[in-house]
Amino acid sequence: MRYETLHDLHIPKIGFGTWTIGGKSCADDAQDARSLAALLSGLEQGYTLFDTAEIYAAGHAEELLGRAIRASGLARETLFITSKVSPGHLGNADVLHSCENSLRRLGMDYIDLYLIHWPAREMELAETFRALNQLVAEGRVRHLGVSNFNLKLLEDAVALSATALFTNQVSNSLPDRTCVKNGVLAYCQKNDILLTAYSPVKRRFIRGNKPLQALGKARGVSSQQIALAWLVSQPRVIAIPMSFDPQHQAENLVAADMDLTASELVQLGL
Ligand SMILES: NC(=O)c1ccc[n+]([C@@H]2O[C@H](COP(=O)([O-])OP(=O)(O)OC[C@H]3O[C@@H](n4cnc5c(N)ncnc54)[C@H](OP(=O)(O)O)[C@@H]3O)[C@@H](O)[C@H]2O)c1
View 1 (cartoon, rainbow, N blue to C red):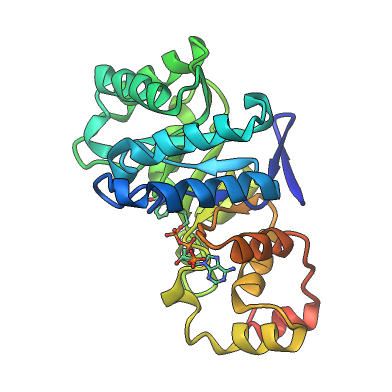
View 2 (view 1 turned 60 degrees about the vertical axis):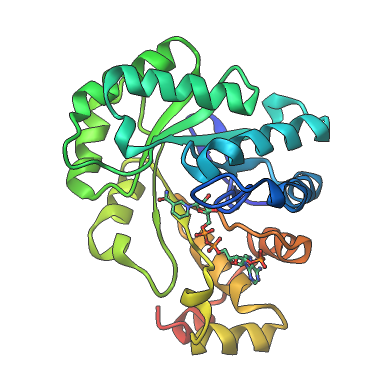
């Protein structure tokens, strides 16, 4: 596994997403066995970075992640857990309350990385960061970040965070290069901020992408693996694919160690 080194931490280039673990917008207990099996398989295969949010399955994804980690027997400090506060909870007291609820559902006494999930039109970013900075000072959260922030908001967040802002988590994949066009990727790379790529292999992004399919076929790997290898070959970029399938989970880990040649990058149109 390749890593990004940031503030003396080694962050794996590939982590594990949890959207649809335990349900979608509501908890769906019928998904528990399948979800726990997927998480345990990920833990057994060596995933150490997990991305979740209070909104995923209305908190149930966090509960299942906590349960899977305890069942794995892995030491908490060997893992890096990200969670997110929802746009409707960005007031000072709401942030503190949301974080306590996430910690309770996870069954943990700290979250490694806590993100604002989406900017809200009516948010007072300074007020939100007062609460986020307090959570860091109290040791409930180790690092702060944002998600779905444009360049202007990202600069504002950097200025308001009492500790170095850790990441901006955004959609990033070969067919969705908004973060290149809007300057967010370049800003992250220049300022030592991780760009965490979400939806890196989503079916609609990969399906029909001919260069990915051709390169995958030539190498005997999947289009998804080429897509991930390309993403994480970029400085300061990590990716958090989600998969229920142990085979796909394994392939996604392998992708972190694949090197693409200059001619392969040209074939991808880069
Ligand atoms: N911050 C935000 O606003 C935001 C938004 C979206 C997502 N996220 C985070 O990012 C994570 C990933 O994004 P996502 O779930 O939208 O999309 P994704 O991980 O790009 O795509 C998930 C889909 O890809 C399939 N897949 C995964 N690896 C594969 C492989 N090697 N080969 C073939 N198919 C593969 C999965 O199916 P199988 O289960 O069959 O493998 C699943 O259907 C989420 O789980 C969440 O943690 C954050």
